[in-house]
Length: 404
Image (cartoon, rainbow, N blue to C red):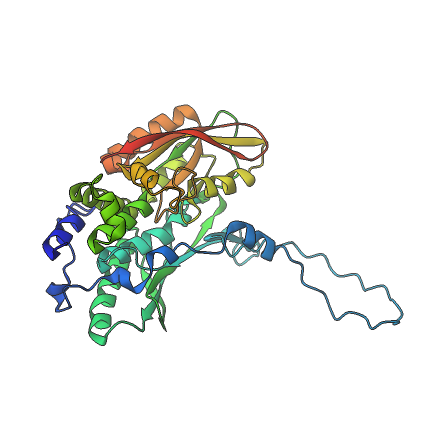
């Protein structure tokens, strides 16, 4: 594929602020025309995080209290220990709510979220925006609209030349900062290290009152499930990379999908990933959401299972619709089961929120989202909440092709 074709397929027609943007061209920055940011992170390895069941097993192991007694030593009763509150440590969680009920803080709570990952697109500015939006997504899933502070995490690839490093990293940092500014938060610092792969992410922190937090565990029978961004970002990114590389995978698919379709799907995915869930969080308060979770590396089903498991009431989630970026479900089908999209396990990058909400309120929610952010902010009712055993029914899904 020529460089001109690559640029055309990668073009982002406009940013969400209405600013027309040219596609990133390495030659504009005196870099080699074949420079690709995604080459500093293997696409197939980006989602190989520790599985949820392994996390649960590792974190449930109790640590021994002391050295074992020597054989034959007289057994003594241990001294009673003061009761301490149990703390659930889950290093797979991207966000946490910490409460410190002291006179210093009163009823205030500390909310933090962190995430990081490898470059998933070749435009460093937009990659910075995506990384920032991804970190903030977990805050918004908790209904926290105002973030007080952000830190940026950055690993510089040892495979980058000095010229590439000094050119690309400031652009990526500017994208991260601009996204944070749109969210109304300052980036006050961070940490950078040298690593084999390029990694970008951050930490978001907010101190707020309990009323400003929407707990995820209040779903009731009769609620519906809302999804605020389409699925299929991971498929679109992979397909675009295969096309630009013009390898065997693209040769297998090129007769079914045009370059224009691939470029459009890639643009839709990038716009979706850059869009903040901030207004979504605001409307969750207005329309009385009963809980939400951000869709990320564990896919729609994986995060729905997490949401179901934490509910206070005996409910189950039933998912029957899957809004997917146009034609990406067809790509996933032709690639066999490698993406696991139709099984609900395909990772999403800076994905939408899965929200439990009253049915009537959800209709008004969807209308106001479009009014405030435009057609790209369309939401979908993808299922219901019913009486059940805190599980997810995920069968016979209807695919909704999304073409915005």
